[in-house]
Length: 100
Image 1 (spheres, rainbow, N blue to C red):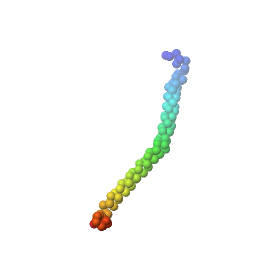
Image 2: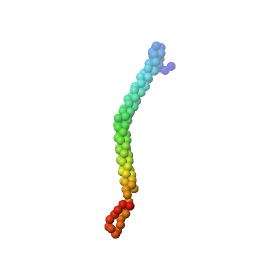
Image 3: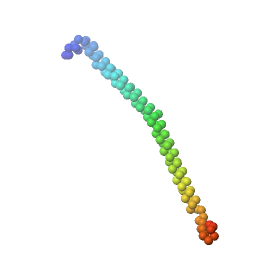
Image 4: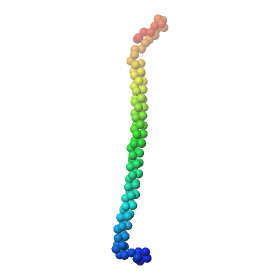
């Protein structure tokens, strides 16, 4: 047997394995708890910081799309106004323009 293990009694030797397992479980729990805390911090950052940036970008995109739609609508109205208006024919002899 190992020389350092021979100085312990049989009760201490039998208690060593479960105590080691409990100690390792406590260490693993502490590492997992730290990991969860870090993950919560990252999720908080994504939710509050990045999501607000994404929301702002979405608002800007919606505003620019609305501006483009408005400008296209204005162009269509100008084109329709030119098409629907009566054409004028100018007579060079009278120097006046009259509708056709």
